[in-house]
Amino acid sequence: MLPVSVLLLQVLAAIFAPTSVFKPQINAARPSVAVLIPAHNEALVIAKTIQTILPQLAEGDQLLVVADNCNDDTTSIAKNLGANVVERFNTTLRGKGYALDYGIQYLHNKPPQVVMIVDADCNISAHFIQVLAQASVQLQRPVQALDLMLAPANPSLKMRIAEFAWLVKNKVRPLGFKALGLPCQLMGTGMAFLWQDISTMSLANGHIAEDMKLGIDFCRADKAAVFIPDVLVTSLFPQGEQASTTQRARWEHGHLGMIISEAPSLILESIKTRNVQMFGLACDLIVPPLAVLVLLCLAVFIASAIAQAQLALMISSLLLIALAMAVLLAWLFFGRAIISFRQLCYAPIYAMVKIPLYIKFFLNRQVEWVRSKRD
Image 1 (cartoon, rainbow, N blue to C red):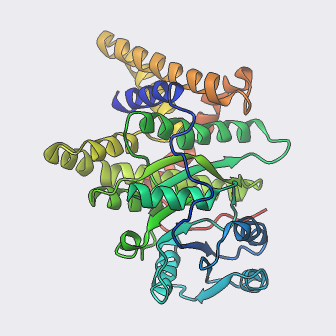
Image 2: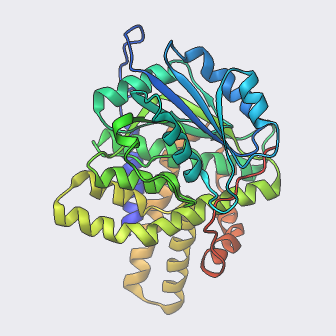
């Protein structure tokens, strides 16, 4: 019941949220910045990413690519475009967290005031670096840009539904909590941190949800992340079925694993310490991927109907109504450019198709980082 209530609250709050929450001084001096790009065999995409970043760098800024266990042309491409590249080779300790830690250790030689993390397949919007750098210093907390994944040209119905679900997760929900004065999850790319904060964090791990884990660690240090939707970082969903399946498994197994391992202790800790920010982050964490939430509500409703348990049937009916309201309102105010109402009606079928992915979570959970194959 709580996850559905949180989702509906976030959607309602997002509808009435201000369109901009941070007003940067575009021409004002800003802190020195290091943009850190972890990269594992990203030769197909890293050039475009670097080319969107370079024009926004000022004198004294750094662009550091960590070529992690690469056996393609990632290193040479990045160097030829003007990025500073460090190479890391360790086939035992694998994962994005280890690459980030390696980059932070390198930056100790010339520490910036602000560290930004951008994935190797992303493009950033205008004033991205200026806004995030100013926001992180002004707020003295980690900041998270709006991170959207977009469907490629001529997308399938499944891709449109996935893009809408991503929009709800990464725009609508954090925008709603932002309007309520609550924090957001870190999203893995488009993040900015003060050097004195990120340099003391434990990053060297192979966790498949390293971004969520880092956000929780910051929250426990009274540095919960702030959502800055004024600037945007985008990437494309992979088109290949295998790459798409690998990516979904990593995201959703990682999220479900974090709910099980972190949510109970985070809720208890927030109540014990009366920490509203921590409680808000815990409430956001327990909202599972949208497909999981749909399946859970449907399962409870069907089980209640079969058992003829009137109270349970009434509660499960209310949950389904609340969930439908949340999804429809999110679509009405934010998602109509992505998917039509008729297409959205196929979402429950899409959720059912993903049942094997969730069964695999319990039988053979993905616990190690596996990079999605690029198109």
